[in-house]
Amino acid sequence: MYREIKFRVFETELARGRMFSWEEIKSEFVSYLNCKETFVMQSTGMLDCEGKEIYENDIVQTVSKDGVLLSKFQIIWSESRCRFMKRREDESYYDLETSQLLLKIIGNIYENPELVGVAS
Image 1 (cartoon, rainbow, N blue to C red):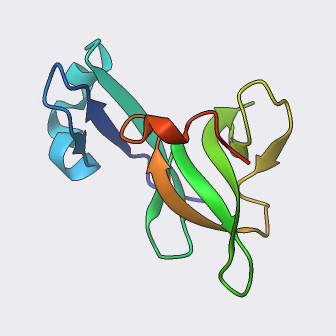
Image 2 (cartoon, rainbow, N blue to C red; image 1 turned 60 degrees about the vertical axis):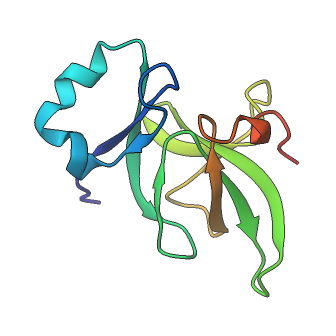
């Protein structure tokens, strides 16, 4: 499966406190890698049920076929594949590329820290 490798960056509140898209950062990407005030997230190359691009450390909810929001998960990289998991201490992962579940992005761990650790 071919996909464009791209990233986005979240700068902490000590910097600018906002998310930057790949288009905004790609010409200066290397400078973000060594900055302790930024968090770099890689694109999975996949879209959620609303057509939004899914990135590492996004928080997603599974969606039933009739649109009901179900369990929450965090998107992570594990064993060189993108997966999603319920909690960091939970070792059960779901492979993002082969899962048949519909996903909806509800936030990310940097802008929505209240979603971290409350996965159901």
